[in-house]
Length: 298
Image (tube, rainbow, N blue to C red):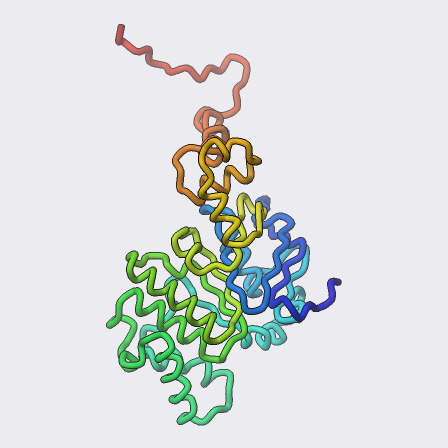
């Protein structure tokens, strides 16, 4: 087993995750340094959300090991894992607020469940956390009374309730307009600087990724193609077509994803992924895939 590393908040080693006959994560290796913001990106179905769920202990892995804050969580009993979970916070896509509780009550919940603090101290802590995300004046509102962006910020305040050392964000900009998305990005950056927390952000929003990241990891079909600095990804994104042509297929694939280009290795691969077989089935003797109706145009 790899010894604990005080310089890293998260260490993922040779992780494999299988659902039925499908391998979703294949030999994943990833280190996240303490205090940095790591962005995990990739297309739909690339495995990024599954990786997040494995790292927080929601999914058991089939092979490999995961270490959080010096503790190997692989194979931990649930009560042990719950103690580790108190040291990190999670912002879910929807905010995951309880609709029957006010914003303040949502933020207070982890403190009431996991600490012995007096109610007066909890109220002070809730006000501090809501002030950090700019929602203190909305403390007595219910989730149905606030906007989507405010729900995200309220969810972030709750994630901060226990003063976590790591914050996990699952698609924090999903479903938000560009202005609100930019505000969430700035909040993530500000919290990282003010609190010194380690942040792991799963996203496919490239504007957000380049705004918040210190380093970035690109997943494709359950494998990591690259883990590099934001500057490395920026330089790859900004290559002209002639310079990009000489790069490896993986780098050209990453570049297409970063730029959102319609043509490139990603779309070429999709075109070659057995569309004809999917439509007509495997070709056998005596079976033709030509249309049964001939065109009448001359």
